[in-house]
Image 1 (tube, one colour):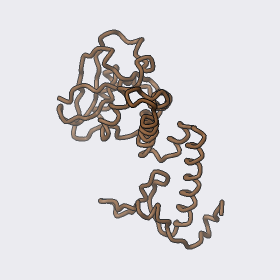
Image 2: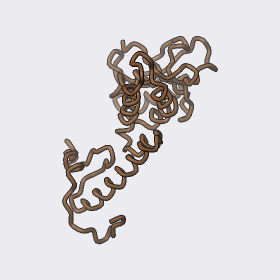
Image 3: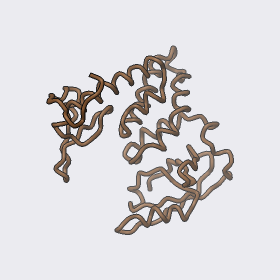
Length: 220
């Protein structure tokens, strides 16, 4: 069955692969499917649709892996799971390297080709600070896009979290942009400023129009 009539869905049990990933919303009372291939609000009457979507996505993911289409493999996963899909690929190729003391060329290329896009696409990056840092530390300097920056720069970050507890690592060269982020918080935010060496910046990107710098400085 490749298609379904959404106005006349058949009754179906949710397949085990998805049933094991149902969670309850703590405040909304809603239920969710939180699976790397299906990530949505759960309504039992739509079981047949969820099953179809899962099977189609799984087939596409398996084909992407077989064909070494790494970017496609990653972005077939639902957004909250793309970082872990990237890590999965890197770990697989690291372990497959002929000499464990030599960084896998394939793993490095996967990082070079996908880390920027996965990062820009992600939300709540501070929740996985250590994982991001491990990946960015493996991004070759030539791919960090920092050569055009001065040797020393002042970074700004708008946040509502007290200094020392802020685990975020997205900074900006634009003080006004940082202020914009600070002003979003109802309880009041503030702008942090930090002078750093260009060589400590892991990535510079303006893809979101934010003059953004990835910087894993001290939390204090």
